[in-house]
Length: 274
Image (cartoon, rainbow, N blue to C red; front, top):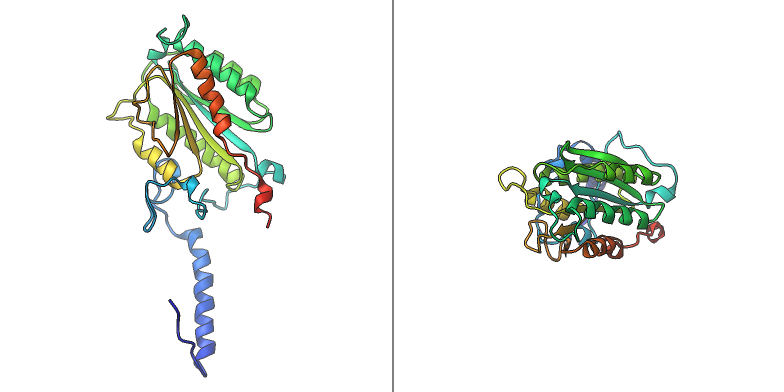
């Protein structure tokens, strides 16, 4: 849409109004109250004029994540801004004590071995974190970091399978950790949420569909799920929007985790230099 050019004494007035409008618009995001969803994902699940089924990561012009505030602290050095981040969520529910699909091991034992191998294969400069739900409840066990591999191995060895499958809460927790890291990196880098699970959540209280929809639609976080001994009929299996691998043996579990690194795009901050 074009506007008629104004003449005479009205021109300075029009220029002043336009400048004031631009300044005002630039300040709106800093104070306008956002509709905040699960884990602080701002906004609604879809935006007018956009396909709600298209993941944020596939919309090249989207640049609204992470929401920043005055408390955001920059990291030291550009190298850390381009860091890759892998946040692991391990299902330590009671069903992981079963020996099906595990080659004689308990499923939790096979999962721990596969995750330890995955940790060894992640690039040394990438950040890795871990959350677990098991007999002690759901909690972050190791914070995102690059110098924490021994901590991660120790935390995995201490998992004691028991209890239910709070997938919604666990994914919410994992996203919250990645959001905090995204703020520290001003959105640069890669963000991967990796879930290893062998069960379905309680649909009444722990259905993760809403939080997953928010994450996929409004953030660059890539969701990877390895479904251990449960096939492909799972709430986290969303073809075309997230990665899902059905693993029926320990080797397939390991390969499913290996695929996380194979599927991860390589982020290069130099692409944004121009």
